[in-house]
Amino acid sequence: MLVRLGERGGIRSGSGLCVGLDPRPAERPAAGGRDGGWLLEWAKRVVDATAPWTSAYKANLAFYLAWGAEGVEALGAAIDYIQATTACPVILDAKWGDISSTAEAYADAAARLKVDAVTASVYMGRDSVIPLLEKGLFVFVLALPTNSGARRVVDHGVPPLYAEVALLAAEMEKEYPQQVGLVVGATRVPEARRVHQAAPHLPWLVPGVGAQGGDVGKILSVASDHQVLVNVSRAVAGAPDPGAAAKSMAERIGAARGSG
View 1 (cartoon, rainbow, N blue to C red):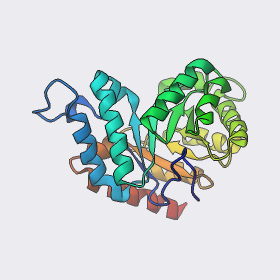
View 2: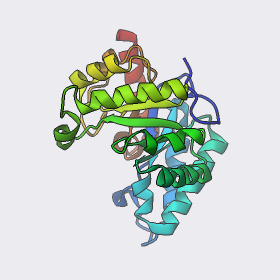
View 3: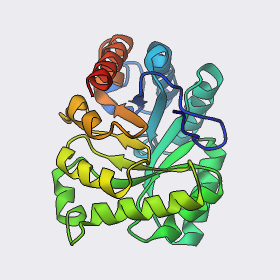
View 4: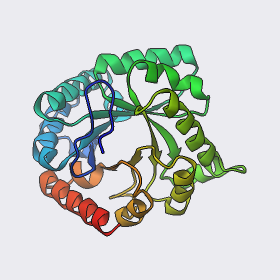
């Protein structure tokens, strides 16, 4: 099954691997200097090495904003490079969520960067997401974060907040078909079952596999009815050989799908 991610088309029906392009200072080459001029070359190197095994790329906005205007410029150039050299959609991981007038500005920013999808929070309600959808973006709504500190918030209430978020996302998907998905952390497998029950057919973006220790087999066993992109950042882009790491992870995803 293909899911339309924004205006450029669908996820490649392939590995299900989403490679996170999150450049960390430790990955800066020795000759990289103090500015962000190295960011684009780093991204190109990772993309060139991993593209044969990758279904999508996800760039976390914070890692580029950390380098100021040069970082944002490098992010835009990296997105252009991915779209010119691969068939992979690009997800901007910004977790935006604000009142509608601000959300409209976020939507304009995403359009200028030419990304296919974004992540968003709905703590401020559907008003914070609708402008993104109206711009034609695919939106992954944050339902289950990977970090343990989020439990106090997202597990609160009856039904828990994460289940209510999944229900709201399913309602929005009826208005904007094939434009809404959920972020569901691989570290929260029992809770992911509840998310599945609340929104049984929405696509999932699954972080937490790799450096955070999530089990790809367990989360995919819950997500057998969903289109899934398994995001891996540090364990692929930060590996000594990103291509080999991407190939290995894609094979793990494939094996888990086959046993699911």
